[in-house]
Picture 1 (cartoon, rainbow over the protein chains, first blue to last red):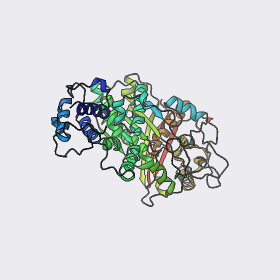
Picture 2: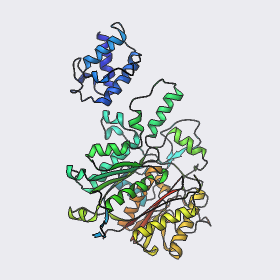
Picture 3: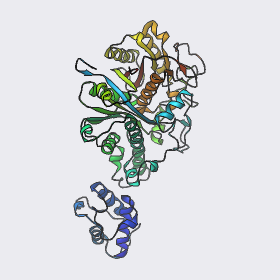
Length: 85
Length: 408
């Protein structure tokens, strides 16, 4: 869980880009001024970090905060996957 | 000030970035001192390159102008455009508030658009065989990206679009903006061109045409061997004369004419009929007789073909007055910045008119019998300039010419 969360935060930081220190596990995208284009960018970064393919029909609109991304990544890769970031 | 429902069109601001500096003052200073911005290519290192020289924008630091989030979305061609637009708007003193912003246009030319981004995509896809591309690839690369960023940055919500006609892109763009201001469609226009084309793909593509000079750019000169790629952006602010005067703006010059033509002949070889027609149309639009023109900032690419055809076109349009014209090609200093060239050269022309100084054609090493006009070789010259032309002739046979008059 912790590794997934860390990799999610580092992916968001790299994609937007943002200082990772400004991203909290429960930060909302609104707080971070992340828009829909940033979300597409984040998904691209997550695919690289976790070495997965997020399906095209995945509802990006559901990703509205860091916790939602972490949860989604857990469902894609499982808790024991630390990512390749 | 309004003639037959047409507005006079004032230039109230200029901004540019090129191999000759990061702002318009540096640009003009370099032009008058005959500084040649051409040098060894530093932005691309690849032993497959035969072309080794270009006129690169030097010491440009994107982080000095933009934050990391902005840079993430900006191809260098959009960065150049944004920097120059900010300079031009500041220089104009125009306050683009909501009221003005709604009636302001952005019209920019570019030959390629986000060339760096396109090259990166090609490298990822075909070179590194990546399965996907970065999601910002399209918004970075699209040819209208610079237009959109300027609109967003300055809150401009009027007509906004990009124009592409290779080496004449900026001149065509400025021409469209001129027409919009002239006909009262907009209260102001931010216009010009931008290009950042010193990339492996573009250099190799130009190289294969065998028209690139290996030594330097010496337009109209004996021994010229072709063109040298440049890069940068030139942006100007246009306003209706009366509105500019009313707000107390300093008017740098007046755009008085615009001519266009298509050769409809050959994709790469210029046509005498086509180029002469564009110059003639410009004079007709300006309602000027040929003998009013004192200076022509030539397309002057430095290729053997262009410079002879352009010389003949000037003879055809100007007749005996051609011998009295001062002509120069500032590409000998800032290189051929493709879709930005017309804007850089118009800015050079505006400065020339304002200062009564003709910038030189540098690297001129002797007279070519087929190029028999006064090309202002190697040294700037003081000369009263009432009206000047800026010529742009593009591959594909698309020609555009602007006429500029001293503000009075």
